[in-house]
Amino acid sequence: RVNEGYPERLPESAQRFEAARHRDKSAKRCESVTAADLKAGKVCKLGPAQEGVAPQFVTWGDSHSGALLPLYEDFAKAQQVPIWHTSLIACSPLTKAENSPKQHCIDYNDAMLAFIREHRIPHVLLASRWPMFLYGENGDVGQVLKAPANTSTETYYRQLLEERVQSILDLGAEVWIV
Image (cartoon, rainbow, N blue to C red; front, side, top):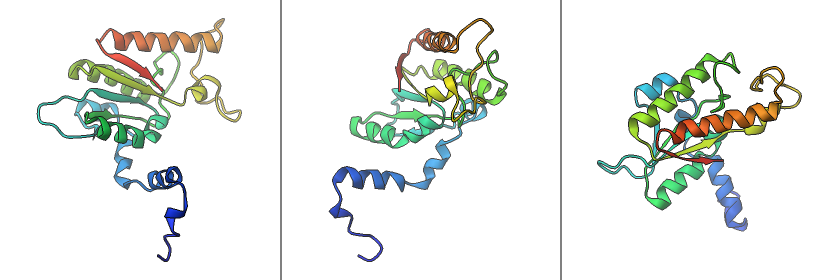
């Protein structure tokens, strides 16, 4: 067993962690789903392919959502439910024209709402690295969603989250936040 290091000496949880680090590199295809991809129906399809069964969940988020891909895959397999996964690196589900110059993120979020509406997805899982878009990271505030003058960042962020959740609820979907 040269070069394998006898993985059975480790606890099962450590073995699962290590296996997840080396998952199929095809997961890279799920890292940056653009607005154009959504319009063309090019999303990562997880779980069982069941003829005539529409996905019950769609994931929506930034790279943090992409990092959760193994969890989504395991859930889809265990529950035998199809899931559509989308994520776009460094694009918060809360990004919109008033708070960010990132047009590709704005387009992606608009396309996600249209996608949910078109496919009548009943469950939407929002996943993001929420604190980074609220406070920045290591002094870098370049990712922070810009609050209007005279509004605290926390108040603005709460307002954005409430608006996003309501926009999804208005489409008849249930919202899950990770």
